[in-house]
Length: 338
Image (cartoon, rainbow, N blue to C red; front, side, top):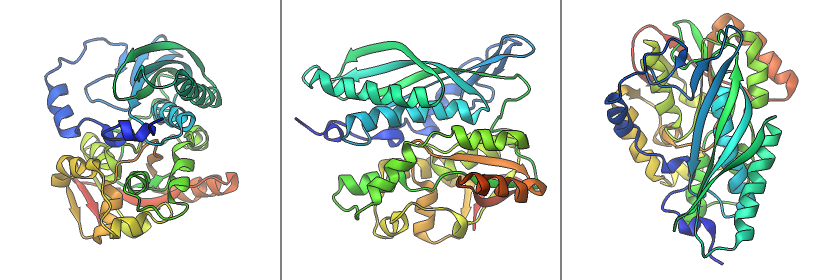
């Protein structure tokens, strides 16, 4: 039986279509003129949001990708977690999910069953229901989910709301792309992939619940475009300059060593093409690679007033949850990695 990752050209969020090309494609679409469409393509965000009434809006997102690991149950859970995290990044709560599946007919049905079982576990852990889906035959396996959630119309977290004077926080360590690529190349040290797996399987539900009382100005989840790609999106859509401290960037075990050794994903190159022209970096090459590394099911990037920093940090510390202060927001434009 072939390993799942051997059937994929690229795995996880590293398989995303280049962000620069997406911008060109989306620019050709006319923005929908609907007063109840609170978040659509102008500007685009982590999910669409549509107002139902004064108290309720639905959050809708979809995400799928080829295998990032060989274990089918873990693959299903990671793919589902990645999509569910888009709802949490908008300040919402997931309600309902549908599977999107492409699978080779030659592979055992039991393998697909394990993928679906892993996804179901993640969806249930998010407090939602996996209620069906659609499956097609394909030589390259792919899996993901479409998710519907709920949010109060005044409680949406856009990525376009960062303000000068804000502090920036990250809720997960970086380096999943480096660890997965090193495993593919047979260069991963013991424990590197396991640490990446644990991160990719972690829902951002608890982090979102902890930050909600602080009314953040802007939030996004860090996935395939890497920290610098998503920071560029936040900066450009907010009309601000984001400054990141390279030394403060949290790394998964061995991630910086792998970057030093020259491990890179295809997504690294595409992320540099997308965000690189807007990034000024004086950081060492390994830390820069960590910041460009495409993440699968990454953490939340949070922007909120700096005077809330100490209390937010204390709240996360008391809950035993990771929170890393990684930078600040200033007037201006672009992203600085210092």
